[in-house]
Amino acid sequence: MLKKRLVGVITVKNGWAVQSFGYRRHLPLGKPEILAENLDRWGADEIILQSVDRSAQQMGPDFSLLDRVAKMGLGTPIIFSGGIRTVEEGIRVIQSGADRLCIDALLRDAPEVARGLSDRLGAQALIAALPLSMESGRLCWLDYRRSTHAPLNEKVVALLREKVVSEALIIDWKNEGHDRGFDFELLKQFPLHDLPLIAFGGLSEASVLRRVLDVRQVTAAAIGNALNYRENAIGAFKHQLADLPLRAPSVEIESN
Image (cartoon, rainbow, N blue to C red; front, side, top):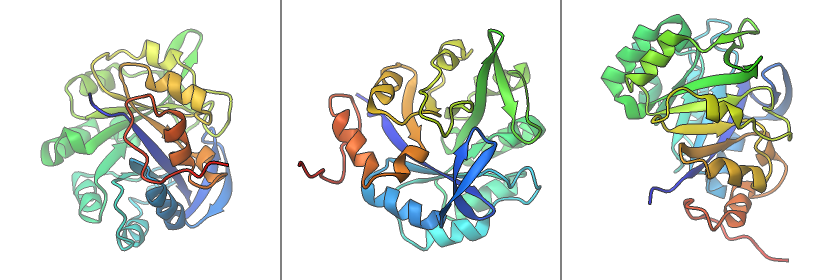
């Protein structure tokens, strides 16, 4: 049986790791490479480095951040998101140490570039990031740069149907950063039933993680803020969910 994953998310703004609340409010946490080192040590299956201000400011990928993380020699695969505008930039991100790319604005602005990246790197190297919400019973896609949302674009759905990406990161952006839980309607209403999904947003309790990971189409759960408040949070979650088909924890949890 294919093992499901727990993915650590580090949100970066202005070069610093931040605690993010619904893509709108951010509190400083420190250096992102320190958080990445902790997640690597605690046994995260993957680490998402998402720079949330690069696309909005047309700054391109944060290669300085990638360079600092690459020099640390972490064993955990890195997924990078933020500012990718061209095939050449995407390839350079991989060459700079990332294992995979996560794209959002690119799907809106230049879907042909997303297809070109898939042709060059392979679909396994690409993840579609989709901040979604239910609005009047309809699945809507947030454009975080403009703070607007609209029904999921049919052109993007068609692109995903072509399998130019290997997975989609379904972001419950309204619950992102909060402990209200994940909106499961986002998974139920997602129009493609054969595309593997990563759930993210509001996942701070083992009970909610269990419900998410029980969904057949979900191959991973991504956790952000909840990992910043206790030592070895990834390992603790894996021990609490030991009966699920998860990758084994790499660090033992001391019993009291």
